[in-house]
Length: 239
Ligand code: BJW
Image (tube, rainbow, N blue to C red; front, side):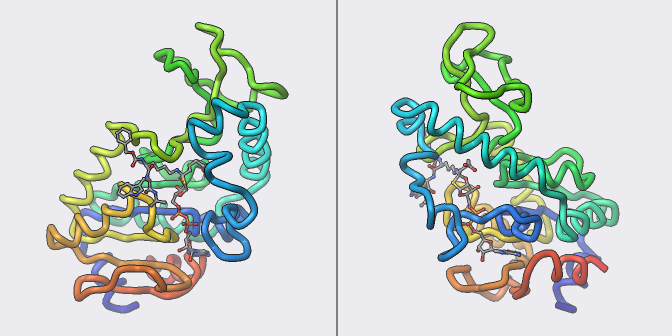
């Protein structure tokens, strides 16, 4: 903990990558945890792929509407707040998230780099430019795109879809440029986000991994594991 805290204090540029675990203490389930993860209850193939939406748009739309309601009722936790404090203390901090909730922004983080889109927005499934809408205004059946009439879809990145280029390039550049990479609450399984810490390590950064379990996380001389929940460990690390 002391070594990691010192590394953060003396860093010029910190790149933070968050995953579902950072919102777990706000009551939002993760994906892959054995008992509580969403994929223990739901099939990713049937809900989080373009094929699923093409086959059962209503089912997919409703699953996202239910998750959106859960996010709306949730509040940022001490981990989200600690990351706001971190950004105010280092010269340059890039916050990259795989999460589709808006808890970082609601805690006060600015310029969040979103790799997997946003649950609180919808966009045209036929790709109409500029048709990103706040989903709170859309109730019931899958609504049509106001521009072309095709179905709207959640503005998230499903399996098999490319990540949005501008955010991914921003994340990659930050991973290359930073001197400390802080990975929080991610299983580091889903590519290409999972490669970011290792890109950073290859470019000489210290990588700090905050997670209640280090099972499945990479290890190495430049990796500092901080074992514990983000809502407890981040405020201590950034005190
Ligand atoms: C706590 C905690 C607490 C608990 N405190 N921590 C090999 C190479 C490259 C790609 C692939 C490959 N093999 C397969 C692929 C493709 C695929 C992929 O990576 N699949 C893997 C399953 C292997 N990747 C893709 O398809 C991506 N696209 C792509 O590769 O495009 C290529 C392409 C190019 C050109 C044209 C076409 C295509 C897209 C990936 C999109 C991921 N989408 C999802 C759903 C988003 C929408 C939604 O929310 O419904 O994103 S899947 C899901 O996983 C979600 C998450 O953002 C993502 C990552 O999950 P995360 O955040 O790590 O959560 P968990 O649950 O896995 O882990 C939680 C962690 O928290 C655990 O470690 C806990 O211990 C911890 N924790 N409590 C701190 N209190």
